[in-house]
Length: 139
Image 1 (cartoon, rainbow, N blue to C red):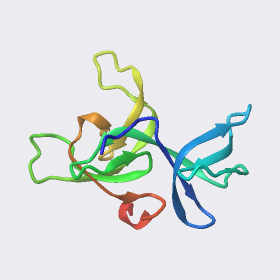
Image 2: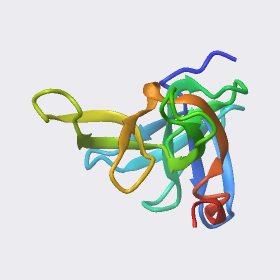
Image 3: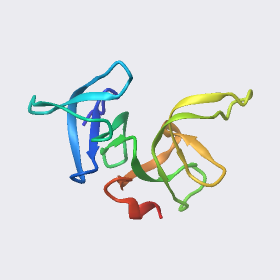
C-alpha cells in the first residue's frame, strides 16, 4: 500500500460508521457540502453530518495508512527501547522544537504531558484504532 496525503475518510457520528472517500466539495464558508464515495456516488451533507480526516501520507510498521484521529502506539525515541506511548494523530499548529522556538504546522502527536512529536519522527508506529471507533483506547 502506498499512502497518499490527499486521501480522506469520514466518520459518520449518527451511524457510527467510517467511510472511505474519493473526494468532497466545500461551500464558500469552508464547510463540507458533499462527499463522494468510492463507487462514485455523491451525497450532500449538512454541517456536522461527517467528520473529515486526512491521510498523513505515512503508513505504520504493519503498512496501515495513518489518518488524523488515529490512535497510535509508538516508541517515540530510538533510545527508549521497550518504552511505548499512546497518542492521537492531530493536524494543526504546534510549538516548534527548533532553535527559535517557532510554531510549526503539520501532523503531530502528544506522547506525554510535555512532549509533542512530529509524526515522521516516530519509530515503530502502530495504528491501534481511531478516536471515533475506539475512544476507550485513550482513556
